[in-house]
Structures are given as C-alpha cells and as structure tokens.
Length: 379
Length: 240
Image (cartoon, rainbow over all chains, first blue to last red; front, side):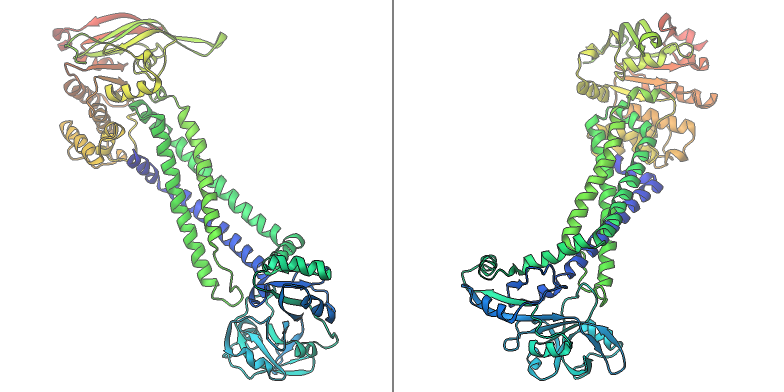
C-alpha cells in the first residue's frame, strides 16, 4: 500500500507543498541559528585554539575568560617553569591597543605579544611574509580580516605601516588567525615590543603558556602548576570551554538564539503537525474505505508513517540544502568566516525533525485507529 | 469452501444491536433473522433509520452485534479475532458505497486495484487485472482518468470494479444508485446483476430506490430493526 499512501500524499498538492515548506523552513532556521550560535561561541576561544605550541594556559585565579585578564607577576613565569613536568613555559601578553593607518582609518585591535625567543603563542598559519620577520624591530603580523578592515579594497601586501601609541610599526606578515569574538584585527608582535605599543601599561603578562614533558598529560600538568603556584592552570580545551561558558552565562546571546530556535521548533511542530493532521482528517473517508476493504491497522499506520517520513525527509533535505547554501555563501565573507554548518547540527536537527513528524503523525494515527470502518456507509 | 448455488451464503440469527447507553440507548436491530443466497441478488429495503445500514455493517464485520450471530459461508465471524476478521473481509467481501469513496489521487485503474494492492499483489499485476475488469464494465476509455474527471455513473462503475476485482464471495452495496439519475442507476444495476451475480457469490443491495427492484432475486423488507417479510422474486415477477 506504499504506492497508495504516496499518491494520497502527493495528490493534495497544496497540503503536500505546505508540509514540505514548513519542515524545510523549520530545518533551515534550526540549522542556521544553531550553527551560527555555535560558531559565535567557538569564536570566544579562537585565539586559544590558534596556539598549537602550548597545551596549558596559566593565568591569575581571577581570570575567567580570554578577553579579560588580570596581569601576572613576572616571577610567576619562573614559578611555573619550576614545576616538575614542565617542558617549557613562555609568557603571552594580550591587550587592546588602537591601530591607525596613514590614511586615518583606525580600529581597536587584539594585540598578542608572543615569546621573544621562540615566538610560541603565534598561530602557524600565515598567508604572506613570515613569523621569523617578527624579530625585526617595530614589526607586527596582522590578520587578513584586520588588514581588509584597516586597508579596505587594497591588495594584501607587507611593508605597510600602522601607528600605535605614537609608535610606527611595520606589517611584516599577514596571518590567517581565526576570527575573534569581536571583529577586531588580530596583531601579533614580540612580547617585549608589544608592551611598548600599548602605552601606559607596562609589564602586563597576561598568560604563561606551558607544555608538559613527554609522559605527562596536560591535565596532570595543570594540577601540578595549581598546587605548586596557586595560579589557575587550564588545558587548552578547558580554557576554550571556560570562555564559551562565560559568554553563555554572562551575555544575552544564548537567550536571543534560544528564542529563535524555539520559535523555529514550534513552527515546525505546530504548522507541520496541524497540516498533517488536517490532511489525515480530510482523508478519513478514504481511510475508512480502506479499513472496510480490509487494510489492517498496521497497514494504515505504515501508510501514515510513510507519508509523514516522506514529507519529513524531503522537507529536511530541502532545509539542509538551503542551510548549506547559506553557509557556503557566508563562510567566504570575512565577517562570517569560520561560521560553518556543523555536522552535529545537521544530525541533531535530523533527529528533531524525525521527532516532529512522528509526533505530528501520532495524532493522525490515533484518529485513523479509532475510526469505525462502518462510518463509510453513512453517506 | 465452495457453496452450491442457491444455498445460504449469509445467515443472521436473532441479531441485536444498540447504540448509546441508559435512556439515550437506541435499539437499531431487534432480533434480525436474515439470509442471502449465493448466486442471487438480495435487496434489503425499508424506510430510513430502520436499521438496513447497521445490518449490512454487522454482516460485513464492520460492527459487532450486541447479541445473535452472523455466519458467512459457514464461518461464524464472531469467533474470529479482530485481525482474522480483517483478513476474512479482505478475501471474501467487496463493497460498493453510496458516495463511491474512490481515492481522489488514484486513477480509475488504480482505484479498482486497491483490494489487490491491500492483499499484497504486485502493482503492475493488480492494475492489469483492474484494467481488464474496467474494460468489461465499459470504461476502456477512462482507465487513466482521475475520479474528478468521471461522471457519477462512471465512478460507481469504478467502485463496482473495485468490489469485484479480488473475486469476493459476498458483495455488499449500500444505496448504489442513490446518487445517480434513473438511467445511470439502471445501467449500474444492469452491470451489478450482470457482472456481480455468480453461482458462488451473494450480493446484498441496500436501497430505497424502488425503480430498481426488478433486478432483485429476493427482497427483504425491514422496519424498526426487524425483517418484516421476504419476497422471493421469480423471473416472471422480475419482468413485471
């Protein structure tokens, strides 16, 4: 009876298309909003993720997330280095200077001062120039998005200058640093130089980056550092999640996205549920006739589930296609780079839509099961 | 089980059926004794609300009687489990409804093939068999028409094909001519008596339409939930 079920479904074009579009738009909204939300949350830890040479981040116990740090003392670096199991430990400086171009464009930027000797703390992705050139005096590496912001419409080239705190600095490389939470340019400099670009503040060591010796896990090292120094030590992954949790708990972002996601889910459930139910109710006489003819209840349930799963599958596929197209377009834009359609979202929404169509079909199934086949004789 | 012609294919004994409870209870069947023979066209007639439709619903196993028993081809249907009853109905019964109840999304051939599809016959074979039957019923030019493209008489012929396609042993027709004009109703009855009546098949027709009584082999008159009398029609009577 699969053939009959599908023909019944597609025979009523208006309802059939209505069901598909309700599920498609619900899917699109859910996948779109959850992926953007996850992408934005992921951005809160972008600069942590970019540092691949250190597994452990050490910070003042009062520091809760990457953007807002309480300075460590210079001696803290030595204390961390003295902890058994530390392979190496270097300092990292983070600040927010204002960078100006000769044409007058300016922007607040994220300045990261990496270890002078090893350059540990810099991401390894560079598009133009080289990290080694950071060793030159008054030099910085700027990320591509920051470059486009400060030098709009101009081709990528090194050698341009920026002015920070009355210092003229030269761009010696263009990096492909991950997008930060706020769309500020990302500047990397040597630690010793970064301090001078900032101005008033001095000796602002934000973090110590450490790597455990072979055989010691990052988690174990964080415990040892904390026990030995009283400082807060987190693995890279833990610190990323700390940042995400901070934004989840202290901003309105989850609520805003949560409302949109809830509405998308509600629309999916109510509109598709109601349309599907009405579709079944309008076909009750046909279902009654089939029952009288000898189609079993199991057969009728199979027909309704097939109808529901068919519209669910087509609607979900269309919605996922729309979401994929959206992210394909916007992931190439500088402002939305790194925000992608996550496979977890695709799988999660698939399960959610399965729930929606099953829930929608349950009411219809109930209606058909309690239908007396003798009703078909009543005109 | 094959039945010799002209013996009772359907037997009802002391059938009772009521709807509702307490003071609102309505007794629709009040001890009905009824039989229909294989190879005959049995009409069930009577005023509206006398219980005709309830009686055929009980005979067809679509409703359970409050008391009494129904025997179809020697099988007491009350003894069958609900699932067995559905299978019994699928194999042995065909239905013609007053409002045709064709599936609007299926063509005439596909509609006529539904009982075969329900029985698990492959789509192509089922539709081929249905087409052959529709050709016999004079619908060779409307095989792929949708129900909305068919006249009332054509739709009822498709419904008749649907009732016959799986070669059931009992066909139950509820007011098959009620929605048709006289000429079309007459042609549907001609087809019914010509195609449906078979030595091993009983046909029960519920009708108000006394213009088609001439097709009946026997007429059971019903009133107030009881069979009041049964007319056996000889060929001569039918001619008159």
